[in-house]
Length: 263
Image (cartoon, rainbow, N blue to C red):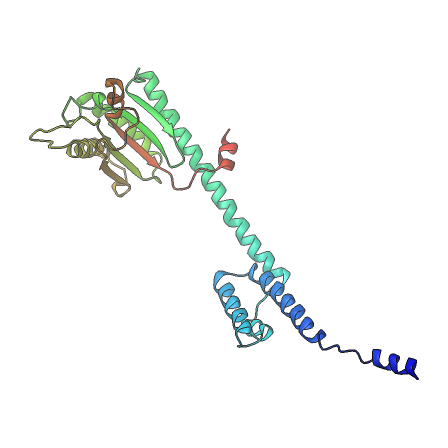
């Protein structure tokens, strides 16, 4: 009898702990389903999913009711479509960067050829960065000391640069004036700001005089002494800082893949 009672007792063990355990498993399953679905949809649907999930934990609708009402489609066809769109956009971006890098290198090559043919290496230099192609012109090649009037020989230089820019109409152009840190105080230019702004504006006007350039893509700006490329403690450094830059601004950022494609 004792043995029989013991076996009978074991057959009726308390199994109420299984209920909360199964609820936890159900919620975890719902969580993974929601996270997977969210990875396949847009931001608005993602926010809606999260709102439904939060509601389930705070006493609102259940997770399954919320996701059902949102009618999430996570079929392979839909996922494939989204991936295809992402792939297409990525390819377009890569192609755009590649064309842009080729343009930048072509412009630089043409300017460098002009520099070499006219022995202007001490006056002009070019540089490609992640944001732009920089054509840097020393101030003495463009202006007399303390003046913003463009020299006649520098006007020809402007026309040459303008002809090259005309071949690449899809880029914005910034003409920037820079000075050294020695103060200036003349009736025409009370500060280095005034001098740098007027020099950039005057040179830009000559760039635009040849015509057939979209003037809405151009701007002039003066930085005074606040963007030096060399130390102002020496005469050579100050001479390097006194310059006008013609900046061809990129539409796309430079990328490693683009660089590898152009090497």
